[in-house]
Image (tube, rainbow, N blue to C red):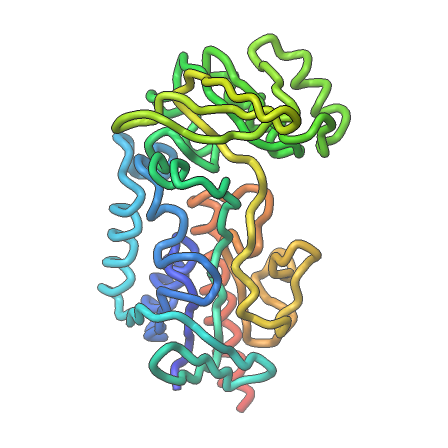
Length: 314
């Protein structure tokens, strides 16, 4: 029996681990989960992080996660690098089954994050972090993209926002959408069309990303005719949505229509008493390491107070 089990080891989960460990709750952090994500979250595939406070010269994503993990372990957190294959979250004690064992917990913090939807192309994986990204806010201001041609894929509000944001740094932004019409709101589309630094390419898909050690361009294919053309570009940002890593919960915790866990703001409490959630798995809007870490702190404090109240009542 563990006082607290934290599922997920990105910025949110590790911050929750630091806080609960310092509160002498000796949390167990399960670093893997059955959700298509990976231990450490999206920062593990991020090259340089320049916007996390405390690192004026920037820090590599895996190094940042490594330091947070080391800090959690220093205060007494236990790490388990396995996947969660099943959970029972009806009431405490909660039960979690991993690939090798069954675990009981008085309180659970869900920090499983969200996975960016990516184009299903081998070259996208090859140049991931080498020009290909899914977060303009995170990576757009980096020196490698400044004064360069950058492509954005998508047709919703997020794509419009990211294309507009990137014009602050890029020489030109090429917005690529597979259909003739956009899903985005009218005002967002009009804003993009009015921006002289944005070129819109519709009825088109990305067929390939090319380069050597870094991305140098992409091949665009006309969705109707099949004709292709090469575009010299130093960046490709995918804005085709995120998938919250919640399928393994099997509906035991309330989620919204997109699968994000619903919490009772301003707390991290979910629909199940004693189960808390934090990070990108509750946040379809910001998806930043620092905001995820902040909600990890909230979840830890909520769990600590809930356990104390439960102990006092027993």
